[in-house]
Length: 486
Image 1 (cartoon, one colour):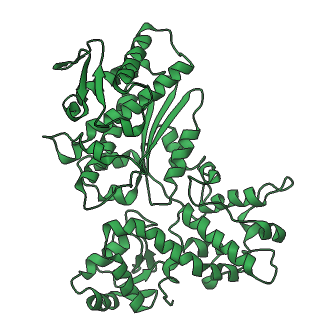
Image 2 (image 1 turned 120 degrees about the vertical axis):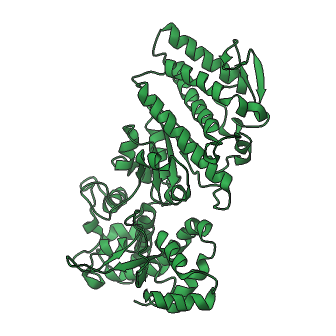
Image 3 (image 1 turned 90 degrees about the vertical axis):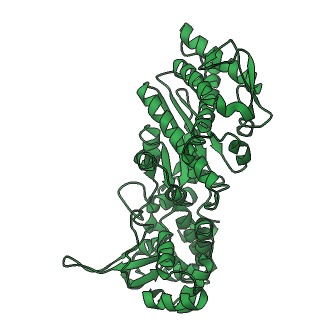
C-alpha cells in the first residue's frame, strides 16, 4: 500500500464537471434513485453536496427508452427571460407560464429527436401530434433543437401554422413577436402540452433537467426570486400533469438549499414535499462519505488481485485521534458532510503524507493534523459563495470570532467583540445568520434524560438557533484559518 500511496497523484477532483468518477458515485444515492423513479422533481442541497453530479448522471442514463436533456444556466441571458414577465398576477407567478413554455420546448426537442430515431407508434393521432410539434419548432426557431439562449431571444418570433385556434386568438400563420408573447403564452402552452402528451411513448421515460441556477442569484434582486419561484411552480405543475396522464416525465430542478429557503411564496411547502434534500452521513449501511472515498481508493489503488480498497486499507484506524476519535470521524467533523469537502481534505492529507521523510504504510494522525492547515482556508473560501450574498458583513463577524481567539465562546464574549467592531449590528441576528450557514453551532443543555449536545444546522436542516443559547462553537474546519485555540 505504501508504494501505491507514493505514486498516487490525488483521490480525484471535487467538481462533477471535471471528474467522471464523482458522477458514478451517485448511482445508488437515495436522491438519484428518488428522481429516477419519478417520485421527486426537486433536489436541494448545499453547494458541493453533489447536485451537478446527479444532473450529469441523469443525462448519462439516456438509452432506448430513457430520454434526457439538461440545461445549465452559467451563461443564461436572464435579461431576455425578464421580458416574459406577466402583469396582474402575484409576483411569484409572473414567470410561471414562461418557464412552463421553456420546459415544454425542452421536452418537445427530446420527443422529436426520439421519433426521428425510432418511431414508436403508427397511430394517426401520434403522427399528427408529432407533425404539429415539428412545424411549430421549425416555423418559430428554424430548427427542432434551438439553443437555450434562443428561446426568449427578442429577435425570435413565435409562429403557429395550420390555423390552430388558441383560445381567443386565432394565430393562423401569424408570427408573434417575443415582446408580445406573454399575452399568448398560456394558449400556446396548452396546445404544445396536448400535442406532447399525445405523441409521447407511455413506456418511455423523459427527463428535462435544470442546474446551475445560482448564477445571477442576489438577495437584493426580487426578480431573481420570482423567476426561481416560477420555475419551481411550473416544473411541479407539469410533473403532476404528466403523472395524471400516465406519462413518465420528470422536469428536475437542482437548487441550492439556501436559495430555496430564502424564497417566500404560497406553494413552497407543497413543493418541498416533492423535493429531496441531498445530505450525506460519514458512515452508513448505504451510500456515505466513507463509501464515496472507498470508490476513489479502489480506482487509484486497486489491482486485478485486489480491486476493492477499503478505508481501513488507507487510514490506520488502530491509532485514534485526539478525543479517541476515529480518523473518519475526525475528518468528517471538519467538513460540512459534503463530497467536495471530503475529497479535498483527503487530497490534502495525501499531500501531507507524501511529504513526510519517513515511510509509512498507512495515513497517520500526523498526516491529518498537518493537512488541516492547508485544508482550512479552502473551507472558508467555499463558504464565501453561499453566505456572502445573504450576509454581506459576515467577514467582519468572523473577525469578531478571531478576536475572541477560542473555538468555543459565550454569548457575552461575542456581544463584547461585536460591540467593538460593528456596534450597529444586533447580536442575536448575527449569531442566527452564522448558525444558519453552520459557521457556528450551539450547546443544547441536557434535560432529565441525557447530557448536553452540540446542534449544527448542516447536520439538521430543520434546526434553528435557540434564542437562549449561551455557549457556541466555531466549525472545526475553520479553526486553523481563523487562528483559534481549542
